[in-house]
Amino acid sequence: MDLRLEGITHHYDGLLALDGIDLAVRDGETVAIIGPSGCGKSTLLGIVGGLLKPTAGRVVTVGAPRADSLNPFTYVFQDFALLPWRTVAANVALALEHHRLPRAERQARVQAALALTGLADFAAALPRQLSGGMRQRVGIARALVVRPAVLLLDEPLSALDAQTRELLMEDLLAIWARERSTRLYVTHNLDEAARLADRVVVLSRRPGRIREIVAIDVPLAERSGPAIAGVREHLWALIRDEARDAEREVQHG
Amino acid sequence: MAERTAPVPFRGGGFQPRPRRLVPVAVFVAVIGLWQLASARGWLPALFMPSPWQIVGALGDMIDSGTLGKHIGASLSRIALGWVLGTSAGLAIGLAMGIFSAARAAGLPVVSALFPIPKIALLPLFILWFGIGEPSKVATIGFGVFFPTVIAAYTACDSVPRNLIRMGQSFGLPAAAIVWKILVPGAMPGILAGFRITASIALILVVAAEMIGAQYGIGAFILSAGNLMQTDQLLAGVALLSLLGLAVSAVLGAIERAVLRWR
Ligand SMILES: Nc1ncnc2c1ncn2[C@@H]1O[C@H](COP(=O)(O)OP(=O)(O)OP(=O)(O)O)[C@@H](O)[C@H]1O
Ligand SMILES: [Mg+2]
Image 1: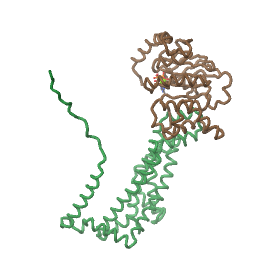
Image 2: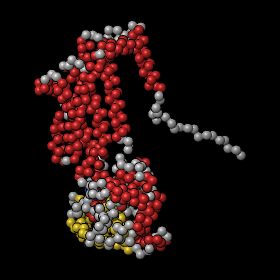
Image 3: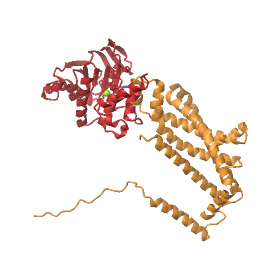
Image 4: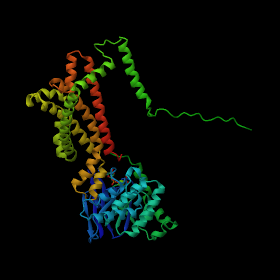
């Protein structure tokens, strides 16, 4: 299933947040979206997943999602959004409970998602007992359990410390090698974009417009080495001035 | 050449409440002991301020004559019935106000207008409507419990993080599932905190209502003891109220620990 964003424009009562975003995303591709603070990245992701209605433009799917996908557009949240009163396994199961599935299959799916994210031993733990990295693994397992066609990740690693972030990036790459979904990955972190993405969409500061789309043709396996340094430099050069301007902007309202 | 060494002085510590098991017991014993001593020495007029021992004696008499159970039973059953009715209605309306904007817009002005009325002022009206018997007392308690429950329930709904609700929507949960699996459990801490408030309101109202017209009940007992200048019995009734309040708060504490284990 391919994805096409056609002229997405969004106003927040008077404030133009996104202006005419056109983007085609191929099936199975990982597209990172970077841009200065407040340029509308979260807004764009909200629109793609149907949580926000754009002022103008539309998101269309081309082709059908895979047949076993229970929730084609699935989010991974920056703040994890786990239910603190549910155990790890129950948090993951939440995404399945309203679907008609045989009990055995439901359990098997939850077990598989927990195993894939390295949570098999933590099924009965409560979120508050887990570190930030493990909590985000629960968020990822909950997203995988519905076999998403498009994974929408809004700064999934931003709440984590640098070491945990590094570990989770490796995990994400390992998971994505085994699971077929399209991913839209919003981040502030150029490293994450350069390490994980096939293409990086660079947005201008508000109102967000596409400045440039950078394709990264270094194989994923070689991304941790110096091969990626040039891409990083290039991305930084693209957003540096605007990031500075955005940072110095006084917030209105 | 050896420099003089000096340890860095310790400046931290303190300002951290820590449990001291014996202190509360000691304070309790000391206060009662002093009181008993003052009574025994005649520093306190026995007619107006009986000694702790006399109060215990009065309680013992009540147990012997079997009136203790009657009074407590009458008060407890009024509290239980009024509280359950007021709480059920309050939760239903409060949750509706937390979920539906229209319900909130309709309910808020009414609740705001009626909440500040001291509910005991309505007892005469309820007596006219329902007669002097049980229903008017139960209605007073239920009414007094209802409004704080409404307010606790809808503010607790507001305090559930919106991102959890968006998460539910993003997984395609039906609205009913979002209410029962996300909103209500998330509002539980606020609702249970409201229960503590309504339990004490119920205790106040039952005593007041029983003082206006009842044969049995702790309030009625205290009033009649006062009329007969039986201060030992009067204070025995007050002590019963203290025990009742402690028991209720212990029960609520146990419920909170069980329901909010995830915190
Ligand atoms: N609900 C809202 N109402 C009004 N304005 C909003 C709302 N949400 C976002 N905005 C504004 O729209 C702009 C884009 O917001 P958005 O959250 O999409 O940016 P972002 O790129 O995700 O920012 P960040 O990098 O800080 O996460 C910002 O200026 C923000 O202040
Ligand atoms: Mg954002």
